[in-house]
Image (cartoon, rainbow, N blue to C red; front, top):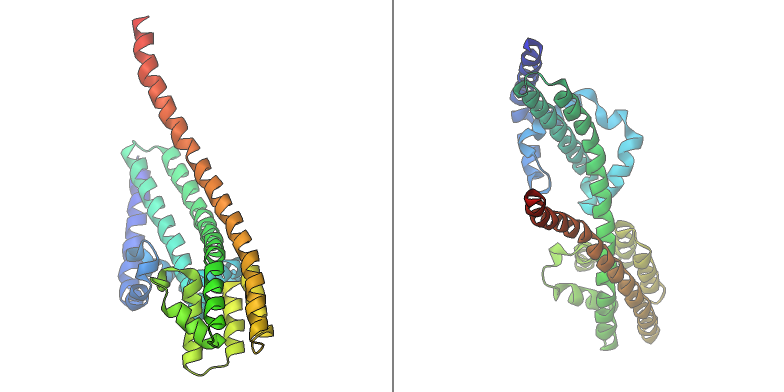
Length: 287
């Protein structure tokens, strides 16, 4: 039992030292990314471990895939910083679970199984968070596919009314409410910024395509660039594309509906079991 107290004391002392050494050094960095990550109170400790152990440089192959997903979800230009914060979140959760497993192990009179379970669970945390990142990327791609047909329709109406493509994009984006909460319009706002700064339109569309990394957006970007100065031909091309995109949107909406119904199955099974126990137990007790 004494060994467990020593184990817990060592963990607490190490975490305390890490916190005191790292807090001032990483306070401003953590504050900048506080809105996007959890356990930021412990992030400074994790960031210190990342820098001292050079984890960003030791595992480039593992982190490259994570960084690619991070760049799609957050700021493309600060992908490295966001990846570092994601890694810090994983380490912070690992440390918290290890600490609590030690506390519960001591509370359970030195239960070694509790400690082992906590360590194994803590090791799985990075895998779970990375999978969650993958799910968010997939959700982002689906959200863009759902929103893109409506945007193309707006573009067709505005171009057909006599606007050039640049002004039509600016007008369509400016009319969208809560554009910051929408993945497609968040990327389009960067295109609008390039247009307003007299930047190269073709380069802005190509960068927009690279940021989205979706086949449907690639087709849309190619259609714009190929028919950019062709007037009525651009409208015809966009109308044809719009019909295809609406079919893709229907398919995505159908898949999401099926997923929602599947998620309801498990809670319904649990409710059924609870009701069965509530009804069956009194009957069995009377027998």
